[in-house]
Length: 188
Image (cartoon, rainbow, N blue to C red; front, top):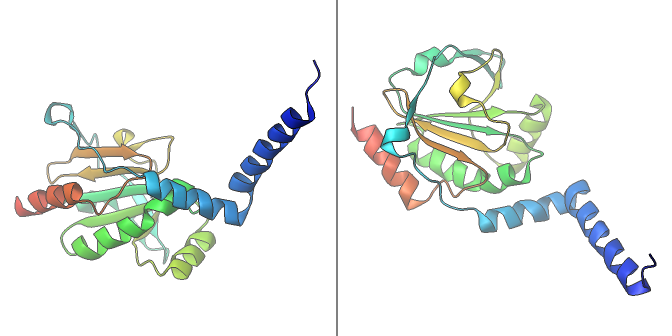
């Protein structure tokens, strides 16, 4: 089967665009911006389907190498996000995550669990001016909080129930998320 010059040119153009988007720093930024444009608001888990945590046994480490025991979060509202610097959808949702953290950091425990090298994370946060509490897993976390996809985000209520589970990029500073967090932090 022979391809015309036009057909070969179009295939090379598509291949070049894919290489640009996935293998160059500028392409990663373009992909992150596009992901941010299509980010949806998150969906709350229906009450009947809300899964309770199977355990709070989970040791993490913060950016300063201090141990953080997830057990200390029992009875608190927790916002948990799994992410990496090399993940365009993760990068795309970071501005809304920073705004949400700024608004609720005194009322909600925020945990940003990085699936990345600490040096890269540190450089990324500094470059972007983000002030987020980043952790790294030292032990296996609760089974119900495992996902092969990033970003993955969970909101856990005071009773240990997962009331939100979202994979992919989202607008975390949406009115819907803020209303849900407001209702969770009021119910003390």
